[in-house]
Image 1 (cartoon, helix red, strand yellow):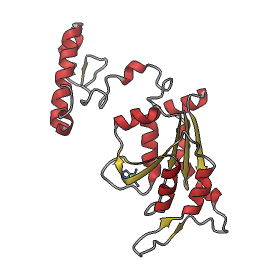
Image 2 (cartoon, rainbow, N blue to C red; image 1 turned 120 degrees about the vertical axis):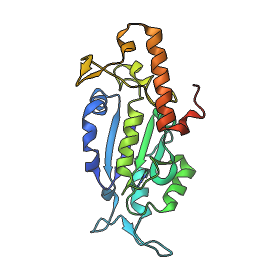
Image 3 (cartoon, rainbow, N blue to C red; image 1 turned 135 degrees about the horizontal axis):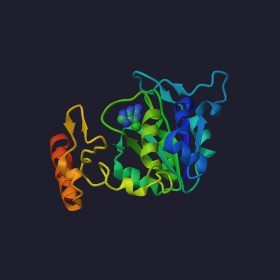
Image 4 (cartoon, rainbow, N blue to C red; image 1 turned 90 degrees about the vertical axis):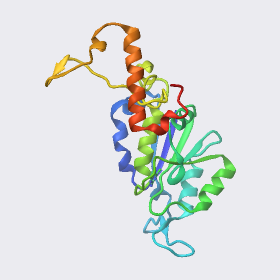
Length: 229
Ligand code: 6GU
């Protein structure tokens, strides 16, 4: 999969060199490139923002640098992903859908956002997806893009070594994941639940499902509606 990121802060993405995503880049499974929006300005101050028409607080990202940058990156197959608190909420389903794509382009806005015409223009030329990572406000799209790239990237075949580990996770089953334990069997007076030491596979599976249900009811009752149980 190819992923391009356009930002005025390329340094945010330096950490994509490490961990699973870093390994996937090294092995060629992910072709990830970061572009500095300011390279696409043509004035001495490398200006990317201006005051909003109609007035109001804050600054708006000018359309020309975005047009210049995106024209050089987007192709017919690409999905332009625009992180914004006013987008639709990004979920595991969104991650699964986007993991099927050949080419994603993340346009990271700062300030109050990007001039609407940039989004309108590229929507006439291809697919544009406005996405939020939750109901709170970040200073820009960079951290949101990082979260989405990690969620999407790990679903691309070859990124996570053992694909089995993706199956039972929180949000894949529709429930939160059950509690997990490793050795030692007792730590600071706390014992691992007996059933997990029993070697009885059916009982282990039943216990885990019951725990997952209980956790989900307690922490995320909104997920129970619509889950298979
Ligand atoms: Cl995608 N961007 C910004 N700036 N804030 C957010 C967000 C995105 N998702 C939640 N808050």
